[in-house]
Image (cartoon, rainbow, N blue to C red; front, top):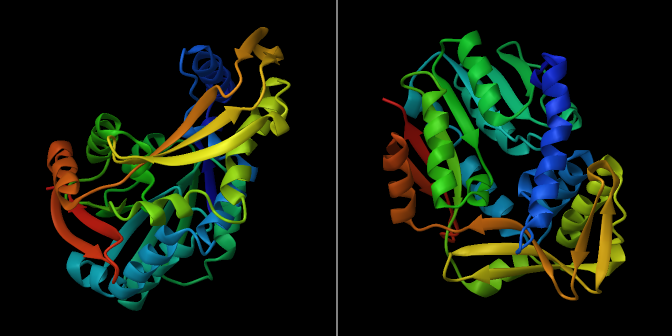
Length: 328
């Protein structure tokens, strides 16, 4: 597998990666209602933990989406009707889901140029082990942010593209952020290309709460790992024993929310920022939204970002939708 590291194209970009993290952490912890972006979950350790979460019996999204992908893997190539395609996957994880789609295209005699985009080099290396060699499969991994990767690929290839944004990753954005992100995806893919996005549907709250508070404590470890990352990268002194994970559904927003809650009154020093941050007892750090959707919500997002819905696919329990959109 060929790998292009966009963060190393110049020294300034490499420096900006650390600066952005420290600035965002400093800003977020200075807010009245403390918050840190969920995008910082996914360092190498975080990525491995998330892969374990997706395989846990309490976490339904992976099972339901995998059911959909296995059902439609031979339908997508016939829907698109080409001989060659660029499949671009945003945040591929271990490549299990992407492989199902790729295998469907290879089975239908396509030449597939696969571009997985991830900020973690180890995630891309893990992914490559799950994709056996095939004379019609060409893999070019991209280390970088999603939109940076799309811009790079657009310069490299004029092929029709199928962009995979699976696992309800879109749910990490609120409505305004989703529309902005999807509009930017629209602008940075080739004409007549496709976006294939996973949407977790609104459902019984007990199912949601169980999925985001798994019985093995993996989600707890995943969230607390963010504090470990801050300790290592920014030389802070967070004591993980002084925080607990809390996940709950917000029916007004239509979203699961994740927090870390301080169990004691404490001061945290971050050496890289040369700053102290005060925590009261039971004060929270907001970490993540995971928005849930209706079919009307999906239609609104598609229309507002410029895409046309080609087809919605759902699982047998109607828990999840994978939606195929087209850029005309």
